[in-house]
Length: 453
Image (tube, rainbow, N blue to C red; front, side, top):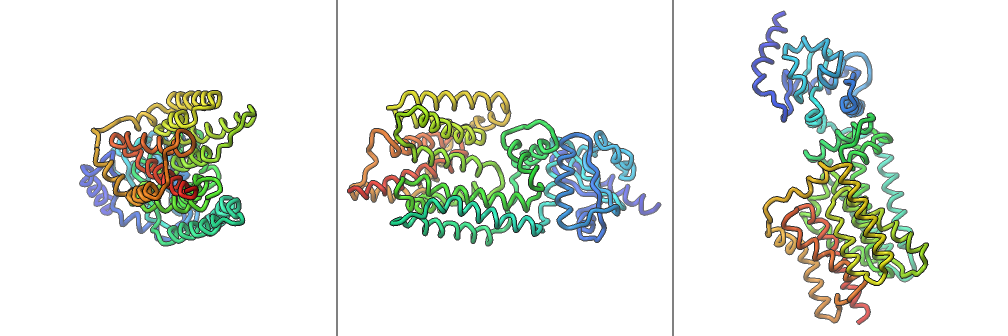
């Protein structure tokens, strides 16, 4: 009785610290740590709503990496409104029921409460994020997918008389060493909402953004743990680096190593892709568009023209799902390839109609990209210094007879795209990595022009 009274007094003293926007522990964080390192088994009981069931799936998946499932400890996820068992046992906390709607970890004898509502329960992820114990299946799966991805991108680069294969092998080695020597990546605060959205989709709820759709599909195959998201993110980074070789001019794929180096040498670029969020997916789709355009074939056959339009449009729409600024690509495409009105019109119509549909489905998500702040011209300075190796190399190209002065084709396409993203950069930080990729690709085109001089 005295212990219960002391605990209740402590909880009441901590009430002012409870916040709907900050994770709280009761009686303290050490109690939760003691639960994690104990030998007790656990059973997760989730609330009835889709988001609570989704978050319960995350908690269960995370705890399963360090503990056995069993009946020693109940782990209740949700709040008193959607979790009947939590409502029955809530009196043991000594707290008013409204506090079950705040993000908190409450540890009592044989019961752990993981509480919150749809707007804040994702904050409890921070209580589990330091746990790092990837199962053997996850490690094996990562190595296998890494190898398969490398082979899929690398085999087409093995051609006689070309060093592209060797440079690609070096790129793969660098990416693998980077993944081994880097600490595990954390989900950004903004991405935690997307993470919960993906779990909600997994549980059968409605999607809040395109990212939540992708995550929900991913979680149907892979447990939703930070370990698996880390491994998946490194595969995405490998794919992004690999696409550099397909953005390079056809016949000179080894210049892909130049694109890779010029892009990843930028600290701001690396900072934008080392966090687990949707940025890398958007950049992959963007790079895929550039790679597809760089490999366009001149064809007068309607069937091949339709195939080209379909491929470019599909990648453009995927990229637009992540970042609406990618819609600048069709504009650059029309200006750089003016001789095919049917193909250009089809590409423009498909891109615009797809974007309108996306806005209709996810207006809050897409509107977040156009909430402009005051213009910051210093972003131009950052791009200049971060892209200084590319700028110097372009100056070298100009001095040694190379040229970017073409009226149509791949080079003016990249030039127009680089100019557009650079112009809009002060009003949106989202454009920096896109500007770096297009600038690096343009530099490779410039270097390639030296081969004909």
